[in-house]
Amino acid sequence: MRLWIKNPLAILAEDAGGGIVVEDTRIVELVASGRAPSAPVDEAFDASRHVVIPGLINTHHHFFQTLARAHPKGMDRELFPWLMSLYPIWGRIDPEMFRLAVRLALAELLMSGCTTAMDHHYLFARGLEDAIDIEVEEARAIGIRAVMTRGSLSLGVSDGAAPPDHCVQDEDTILADSERLLNRYHDRSEGAMTQIALAPCAPFVVGLPLMRQSARLAEKHDCRLHTHLAETKDEEAYCLERFGLRPLDWLEEAGWMGPRTWLAHGVHFTCEECERLGRAGVGVCHCPTSNATLASGFCKTRELEAAGSPVGLGVDGSASNDSSNLMEEVRHAVLVNRLHYGSASAVTHRDALRWATEGSARCLGRKDIGRIAVGLQADLALFTLDELRYSGAHDPIAALVLCGANRADRVMVAGTWRVVDGVPPGLDLRALVEAHSAAARKFA
Ligand code: ZN
Image (cartoon, rainbow, N blue to C red; front, side, top):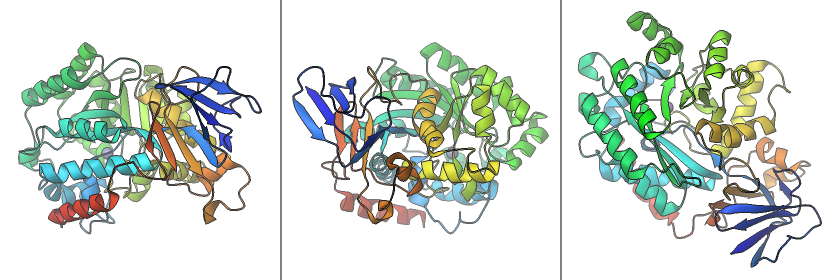
């Protein structure tokens, strides 16, 4: 089956004005303006109303938090008090609520143009031992590419940390389950639809032994490592007081300073630390909306990229965003970074789109996604510009970001349309919202 996505209004790729040809799961040809594909096609999709970009890749999220959006207990607080208020509420989660949260977050991401979703799930309350299995099942059902991380909490209330004790697991249980998931789901082949990464939650809720064991396991199974780091000044003060180390030195102690690792946030690194991260090839998932909502600070995106670190983009959990819209995140990335650098040209719409595509792919260690190029997976997001908000726009790619695109008309994952006319075919959105809202009431 050869499909020609024909004559797009605009496309984020070089020399592809005439569109692209997709065969099975891959992009096999870029067609120059005014030209036709070099060989016959079975079908042509008229993209003359569409702006075509590589599918967006989300590199940090907590799906379960979609059940705690705009929650009065979490609003208007910074990270530590926000966590202290919400952990006891999150502890009430059950498997049915969790499945709905996952389904809703995946649908929301996909409809915003995201073709690869990651989740950092660390709550394994009783009954939720198969949380990652549920995530994989739901991702396969909706057809999105998935990198699910086996998160963990090894310190709870009785250790002086915030998580309720019933959500905390011992290190042996965490490591055994990590290995089970890697054996069962982690696909290292090109075009993989499901991958697993290991993700102890943060320096204030896991110990160094678990970090070190996770790094060994990642080496054995060739998977990525992920954690929250340098998100807030409070975290920095905690690490200095508790370990006598800055967060990055703690990471180094854990044996995580290598190209397998990508970090969420990376806000409070010094310029010298950015250099160290770049030299080690550690990636950083920039979460501008979450960092603004919790007033955590500004990520040094330019310094990190200049040092050689992959910089990706993430919506973060929906209780600190409070949506899961990756295309909106691209816009916020432009705005937040311009404020940070005090310069309107410091970060452009193309920079932010690059973070959400190529940069995120590099964070995940993927060479087969993140760009529109021959041989790469056919992961695409197509937006129309016929809403009021775009009328009068001149540059169609810039219009997506600057006018605030937030819903794709079509999304293709591995050569298959997973969003058609703005919705995932076969998904009853109204029923999903009703069931998810009802489940969220248990967090009231
Ligand atoms: Zn997070």
